Length: 183
Image 1 (tube, rainbow, N blue to C red):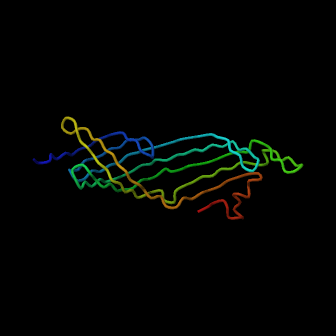
Image 2 (cartoon, one colour):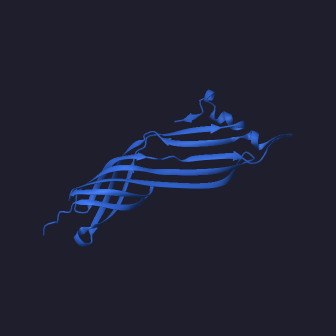
Image 3 (cartoon, rainbow, N blue to C red):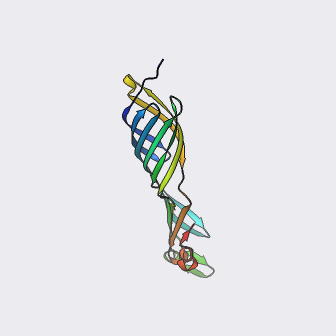
C-alpha cells in the first residue's frame, strides 16, 4: 500500500523544559516539515540562606525559552531528525540582601552596611544551534491532527556570569579586582 502524502499548515501547543508555548508547522511532504514557534518559562523562588553568620533574604528568578525555527527531516514514516536555530532567552538571576547585623568581635556592623548582591547568568550565544530526534503521528479524519514527541539540545556557548554588589560585599564585584564578570 502506498503512503498518503500529507501536507499543509498545523498549529499547536507544546510543553518542554523551556516552558509552554505554541508553534506553527508546515508539512512540505512526507520527508520534510518546517516549524517555527515560541516558548517561555518563568519561575521565581524566595528563600533565606546563611553565609558566615549573616542571613540573606534572596530571590532566584529563572527565565528561559525563546523563538525557534526548525526543519524536521524524516528518515522513516514517523521518525525524524530536527535541526535549526533558537533565539534563546536564558536569563537566570540570583539576588539577595543582608537581613541581620554582622557581629565582628565587639563591633556590630548593621545589615545595611553588609550590603546586597546580584548574580546574573547570560549565554554566550543569543542564537543557538539546535539538534534533536523525534517521532510524529498523524491521525484523525484526513490526518488533521499531529502528535509529536522530541528530545534535543541546543548549544549556548560558555555562560557569562555578572556580579553586582554593595557595602562590605562590594569587593566581590569590584572591576579593579577583575571580578565584575566571570567567564
